[in-house]
Image (cartoon, rainbow, N blue to C red):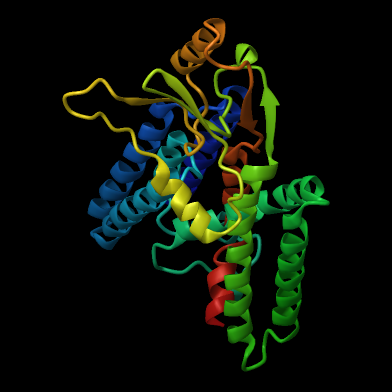
Length: 327
């Protein structure tokens, strides 16, 4: 019991600190994330040697590697910032399995809550993080998209997803209950993805470049090429094809033997906020009259508090998600 409790307390403390800095400064300190990764690996390897159970270390290493690759993919897609990637990897290193502290403390013991003995916790944490953020995001996006072409499509998808959830709950113990669960899960993931794309369009506002602050996330790409200014607004990203093309578009190239270079000063494809040197360069262009004094920035809820809420929830409900699938 002591080892899981130590891992839980370290994880909660790390996420609480990261949530505070994310809310206050919109950053997650690298020192914190690297410390969580190192602690997770060191504690599991040490415990594996002490208990002569090297599967513990193997699970930790596997969990850390795939969590990093998965979150890196989200970073490349512009969904997560670099700090989120490192923090998520640290939590995966500390929690290859669901600790289910509520069960270990004897608060209750129900079979459907029991944790699985396979390292799926990072994936479950990601899904619960989406659940934590989805309700607020859905409300804001639907409110702002009202009257737009996308509103009806998003509203219909939401209605279908809710209907499938009700159907699955109603026929949970029926023979085709598992089939309904998979259909519902597919629609839910698709709807969450559509909401992510829609948020890129509707969760944005226009501010003066001269009023930019560190950490603000650009919703448009501004680049200097051949002495001129390029702006890419990235509108219409409500389907998979447009999203893939959007990711592929960005290339910074330097042609050999020429002075032609595309220098990106603000990149909407990244989830991180603007850094001081980038803001300084943008303000300089405005002062020189080369760039209009406005830029669109993203309005988004900080990710880390949602991860913290999901982590605590999973330690209360165990592997309910996977047990429902396997029941």
